[in-house]
Amino acid sequence: MVGVPSRHKSIFLLAAMVLLQILLLAVQIKSDSQGRLIRVWTVGAISPFERAGSYGIGGVRGTWVHYFALQNTSRENADLRHENDRLKLEVTQLQSRVAEAARLETLLNFRQAHQQVPMLGARVIGASADSASRTIYLDRGEHDGILKNMGVITPDGIVGKVIETFSNASQVLLLTDKDSGVGAMLATSRIQSPVGGTGEPRLEMKYVANDDKVEVGESVVTSGMDRIFPPDLAVGTVVEIKSGNPFKTIRVQPAANLERLEEVIVLTTLQPLILKHDSSDAASGANGKSPSAAADAAKVQANKSAADQPAIDKPKSPVTHQ
Amino acid sequence: MNETYELRTAESHIEVHKFRAGSILGTLVIIFFLQAFLPIYFHKLAILDLPLLITIYFGLSRRNPSTGLLLGMAIGLAQDSLSGPTVPIGLYGIAKTIIGFLASSVGARLDTEHPAARFALTIVFFGLHQGILVVERRILLAQPEVWFTVQLAIAALVNAVVGVFLFTVLDRLRKPS
Image (cartoon, rainbow over all chains, first blue to last red; front, side):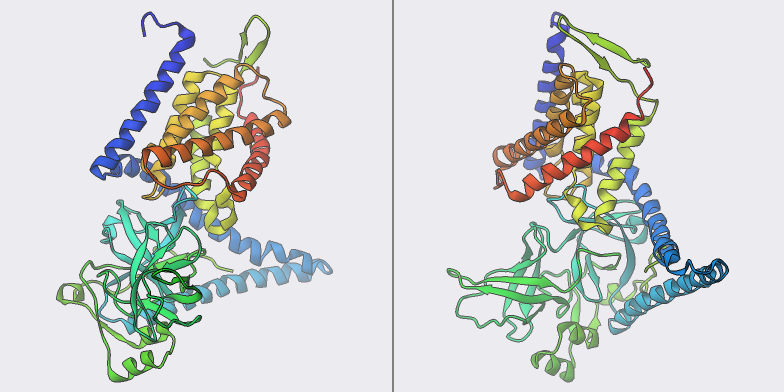
């Protein structure tokens, strides 16, 4: 900057940098690109630390909760305490394995109820760096066959969809994000309407006419119309209904605990999934039984290409849980 | 550039702090790790904007507007990259570029070592940062965004309190004068 007083250089630099970023924003809006290269670099740099932190803190937390935090309860006798702690540590390790086995059993049961749906277990290793958007990072990426727009669920209900993939990680847009949405219907009346995120813990069901009858406590399940999730997976429960013009405002509590996700299942197919009902399943759904039970009991048939996919895998390594 | 020196003006002299080699980069990696990782286990900690606190701290300490705005831009762009699809690359970049510049400019004129001054400055910069974000969303992205909520006020206070303690910890990374 020849001829520019040094005290003004920083102001010129500020103006140039801000202008540059405004142009960057404008390019993204115009081309609908999301600056993938920068994201790949940044996520590639941070995700190894998140992965290591996830495993490390899981171990430290387990050891702390089950070992050190119990020390105050056994101060009367040092020898007994020492012996007790050693035994407790062993029990803790066993409990962690039992807890993990229980979680994996749940996943496996879910898998067995949906034999022909290709699935992959994944661990949550990070959250969004911005409190306004609701996303998480998984420890599975392109190397594991994860692709954009794949559905992500837990045995309790649906979680969201994959919006970005990296070599060993992927980013999932949670159902509660403002930009998120899923094809859904009321389990009892079978009224179809999309359910979307609001940026808050609860979801909103849109476009249900005032004349339609909806009850608080009614279950909301996937309709399959979005071609990402198979029908009859649990979305949530209606917790609040307000009349509007011309549609009701319906608040839905998500079935999956989206605030505390540790392990999830990725539906590793982009082909639309078809749910095959037998008569008893259809009856149970119509009788208002829980959608997750109905969904678990139902047999899901994927198309031919999906049938060749591998069965559900364990998350990449065990986690210690309290 | 490895020693502490003083910025002398007609009225006053203010110390410019240098940091140990790699400490800024290391701090950034740790901060982004914590920003993405802590909310998983402690959901309420999502209220913290650690990248903003780091931008303010290094701006106030380095007291060089050019360095401050470039560091703020790098931090902001990294935060954009790690955020979801509702955050285009450049949203936080612009906000933190400006905050880095202002923090460095303020740091070159005021003594910002006292905890009370740091507390007040963090609240001001948090509000300013939020204001810039709202302007960007409304004008550049045409998205509806509220100017003020009680939650934002609480977030400003919480970030200021955390900032005072965080800045004290980060002071240990400075090279001795």
